[in-house]
Length: 353
Image (cartoon, rainbow, N blue to C red; front, side, top):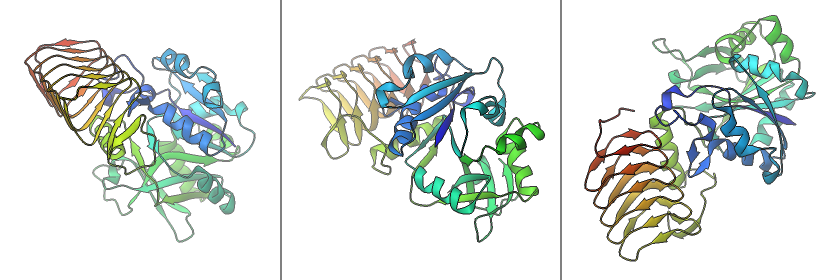
C-alpha cells in the first residue's frame, strides 16, 4: 500500500507560529508533525509516500529530502495554486495503482493503519474514513454510520446545525483507485464539503471505521496544539517523545544541561542541547526545544518554547507558545502569549487562542 500526506494547505489558525513555517513542519515534542506521520507509516509497512506541497514548501522538501533516513521513499506533488484536498490527490493519481491511504499533514495519531486497511478490504469499500469520537464534533466533519459501518450521511463542520452523531472525521482515509473517477466526474475539490456527502447520497460503498483504541488530535489551532503536547507528556499516546525519561514524565534529550540548582517539575521535555541555569524553575507541563537557554532565576510554566530561544534571567513565562530564536528579555513577564519566531520581546500584548 502507498500513502499520501496532505501538506499543501495554509496555516492561518496557527499564526503567528506559522508565519515562517508550514504547518506540517510545526514541532510536536520537538519533532515535526510530518515526521511523526512518516514514522507511523513506516511502522505499518508503508514506505512509498507522496506529499503534496504549496505553502512554504521548501521547508518540507529540505527536511524530508527523499525520505531515506526513515527507510521510506518520498515523492512530491507541487501545487502552484491550491487544488483542495480531493483535487490534490487527483493530481497525484499516477502514483497509485491499488488501495491507498491518505492522511492530513496536521494529524497526530498512533492509529493502527493496518487494521484500518484490513477493515476497508473486508467491506470491499470504495472509500473508508477513520472516525473518532470527538467531544466537539461540530468542529470537524461528522458522519453517521449504520450497524454495518456504512456511512449514511456526512456533513462538513456543521456548526449551528443539530448534530446527531458523535463520530468525527479524522482526515485519515483509505481509497480504491476508482475514487479518481468520482473526484473527476463531480469536479470535487474537497473531500469533506463535496465528495463525501455525494458518496453517501449515492449510496456508494462508503464506510466509517470507528477508532476506539488509539490517540488522534488535529493540531491545527493553538488550543489543540498545546493539548497535543500535554497528552504526549502525560502518556496518553504511544507517539515518540525524544530523549531519556530520567524520572517519571521528565525527558532530557542528548547534550542538554540542567543545573543541579534548577527545579524541574514534571511533566517536562528538555530538548537536545538545551541549558537550564541555576535557580531556574521549569514547572510542567513544559516543552523546551533544542538549544533553548533558560537563564538563572527564570520561571517557565505550562508553555511550549521552540528551538534556540533565549529566556533571560528572572523572566516569567506562563501559558505561552514561543517560536524559534526569540529573546525574552530579563525581568519581564510573558503570560498567555503566542510569539512569532525570531522576535525579541521586552513585553507584549496577550494573544488569544
